[in-house]
Length: 166
Image (cartoon, rainbow, N blue to C red; front, side, top):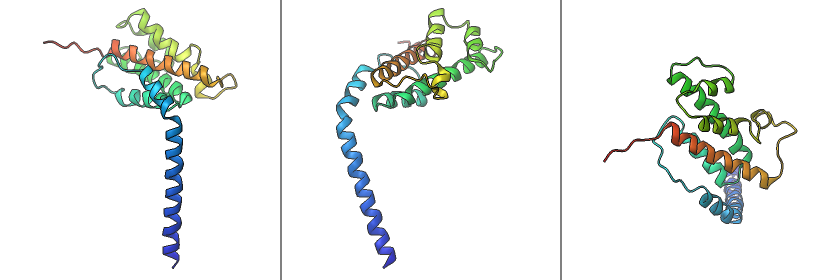
C-alpha cells in the first residue's frame, strides 16, 4: 500500500508542476516571441567551439533570464579572447584586457565590442560577483542583455566568418 500511495503522490506532484510550468510559459509567451523577433539571426556563422554556448545565450535572452545572458556573454568573450590568443600563437594572460590587446588579427572596432561586453555598462566583476552596483531595473537589464547578445554575434561573425564560394 505504501508504494501505491507514493506513486499517486508523485503523479500528483508531477501534474501540479506541469500545470504551473504551462501557466508560466503561456503568461510569458508573447514577451518571448517579441524578444526572439528582436534578435533574428542575419548571418550564418559556421559551427565552432562557442556555438552551443552562444545559442544558449540567445535562449536565455528569449526566455527573459537577463542576468544569465550578461554573465554568459561576458564569459564567452573572455574565453574567445584566450582561444584566439592561443590560435594565433600569442602569449595568453590571465587578464582579459591584455589578451584582447594582443589580438592583431581583428580590427579596433571588434576589440571595442569585446571590451563593451566585458566592461561597459555591465562591468564583468559586478555581474560575476553580484556586487551591489549590479543593475536591478528589468528594462535596463533587458537592454544590456540584448546589446551583449548582438555584440557577441557581431564578434563571432568577424572571427568565424565563412567564405562561401559558388
